Image 1 (cartoon, helix red, strand yellow):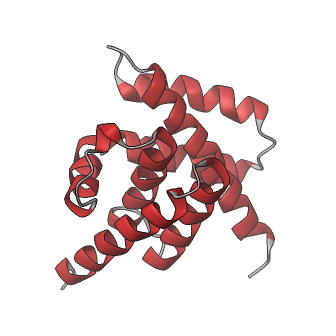
Image 2: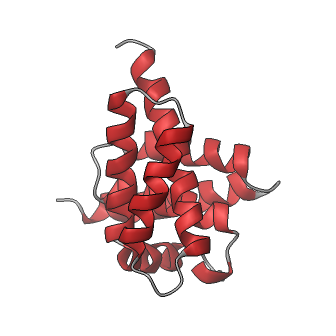
Length: 148
């Protein structure tokens, strides 16, 4: 496998995180998917992403947005003593993104966790990466136990 594909997938996740963050802060009464589509177009115009990376970013944003309630419930279940709405916006959206990949995507859980931790380290606070890692580790173990 070439190094271009993982790098473009990482850039897709960065773009998706920025879109989800924007949706989280700007949604109001408008449906999340509508805000997400507009934000995705804005981010794609400002990121120099190859076509495949654009498509993957779109898949991540749409999947996460469409399953938002389910993902938040799952995250809440595995984030001991934390309400999702009280989490830092970067942490919350890195968790949502990775949770969607673990539960609905084709990405191996270890890769989704590693990518989310990397995003949290880069864009979040001092303790974000450890928090994201802990929640996703618990979530991925529970998801693996449910698979026959």
